[in-house]
Amino acid sequence: MGLVHAEITLKNAGDVAFARCGFINEPEIRQTTVQAMVDTGAGTLVINDTVFNLLGLTVTGKRRAELADGAMQEYQVTEPVDILWKDRATSCRALVLPGSSDVLLGAIPLEDMDLIVDPARQALTGAYGDEVLCMIK
Image (cartoon, rainbow, N blue to C red; front, side):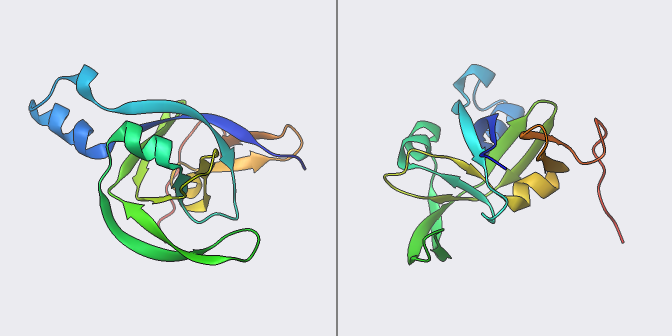
């Protein structure tokens, strides 16, 4: 299986909340559309410092994480980011990987949007077709 990429839109979730309350206008929401690498080995959304700055995010903490090469390092964690893919959306905090050119769409946002990787088509697809299902057990 090769690399799978997906076009996603990332929005500053705080801006989205401010727009909903009428404090800012919708065009003022800081957002960007990127080609993200779908990485089921990554736990969450991983952004680079360029995306971090474009979205005007705030650092809320730090977390140790292991890179694919086994290196352990401490990374900044951001306030929530809204992630949109086609008709699906979720929010999660992001890890900032300075100097990276990639954005990684990890397992937690994939699961929350009910998405899987289709290896035959090398594409992202809904786990249950077009219907988004939430698992409650």
